[in-house]
Image 1 (tube, one colour):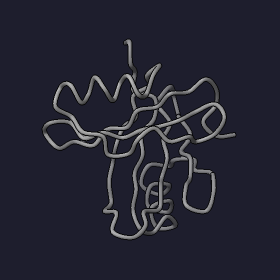
Image 2 (cartoon, rainbow, N blue to C red; image 1 turned 135 degrees about the horizontal axis):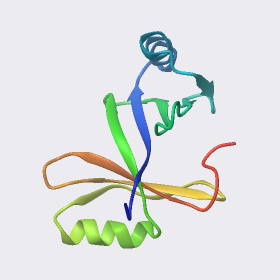
Image 3 (cartoon, helix red, strand yellow; image 1 turned 60 degrees about the horizontal axis):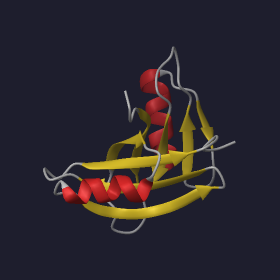
Image 4 (cartoon, helix red, strand yellow; image 1 turned 135 degrees about the vertical axis):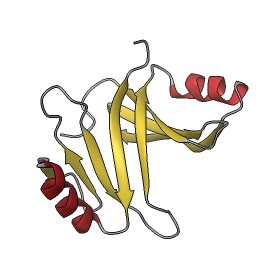
Length: 120
């Protein structure tokens, strides 16, 4: 696959409750990655993900992240096809940046450009 799904994220206002729910429901191994984010280990070859505490008016959500080589180029392609940028390219660390778009049907999807680990 040229642009694989490489990460997923579940967000909500209570990160501790999210963490407890998913750890108990599925036996996921979850580690802190900051005060408002936790990483979920990939198990048995699955795709790893994260849990995020939302803030303000941001509603709970679930999204996937597609890896691309060029965030700006991918957002331009998305825009030409009727999508809209929700979050412009944003640096995570020295090796990774992300962006978020809404497709023409209203789905919100993330993009990830990374040359190394997202967290560590």
